[in-house]
Length: 436
Image 1 (cartoon, rainbow, N blue to C red):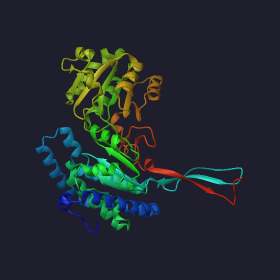
Image 2 (cartoon, rainbow, N blue to C red; image 1 turned 180 degrees about the vertical axis):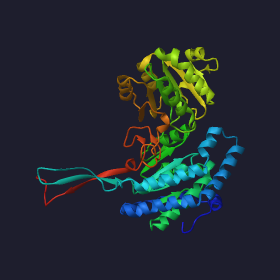
Image 3 (cartoon, rainbow, N blue to C red; image 1 turned 30 degrees about the vertical axis):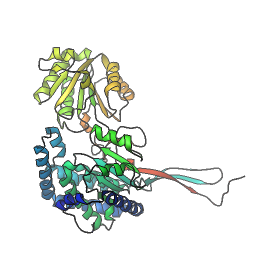
Image 4 (cartoon, rainbow, N blue to C red; image 1 turned 90 degrees about the vertical axis):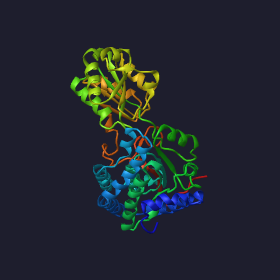
């Protein structure tokens, strides 16, 4: 893309007849850009990132105006409030994108870092060295800020990326991409390092899942359960799965009531549409008499619907009956399920049965109970006395994240710069040969 593509031009571009050739060409360009980026200096990449941040700030009003178009379309389609919240870009959220790009630029460059080194008795010197993954394919929905986060993180890690955002954020994504492209150009880096598939035709997703004829090294899906399921079913390349966030807060018998109330309300209501929002409240039966009703009351006062078991219904008249399906539901809106459990062991069992291995929290002043929960709950992120809304790469000091990986291979938890690298072994000798 030699010159900035206007948002309308990008939208009109989807009528191109040969979708397959268009998308495959992006893959070829990305592969070439990845080879280039792998050998670029930290200074060049950081210059591009700070330039991107500056341009995002300069064009904040343009980005917000593009986003308004997407929001209007979503509202006309009757999208729910939580969806609109995920889609929305305010000037403050645009500033957060810019700040995230700047923070990524300050992180240590992972490429070339020596992870381990040792000498063999035969004199060989062996090092395990971080390398870029290559080309990342990113398929995401709703959240236009992912365009900046993913582009910035991949660049820092020396990767090229091919983006396929949801049609609901089309105008917003292209407004942001234009800023990233100009930043690459300002730094003299290949503009094909960060590309977006223009067409909204779903066949483009199928092409990405097949790997774009070997161009894509890893696929990262970020969106609803149906998207992630399709990616996991059809992908012919490795996948960093960002599965749904069925997050729990367990309030133990030794929890401070004021702390528990504050954490639960924040975990559910700060932003209901993010993957780190709490979806289920578990309360220790030994604390139910003192803690259950005040916490439920605080949730309802904050605007949340509460669906509970018989104990929760008995504690608060405004609670409606929960079904078995509720315990396994990611609401992504102002609804939470509430259940009384017989201590930390039953809480751990409930989370193992219904959770998504994303983020789970215990509130307690008992260190031993906390350690048991943190050790035995098998989730990507476990917290003690802190809101689940901290499940975020920026809050972890990573600058940003591409997603929260809930699988166990390669990357788990917030996927930041380091998680977007692999490694190779560098072996140095002095003429050694292996004996016959």
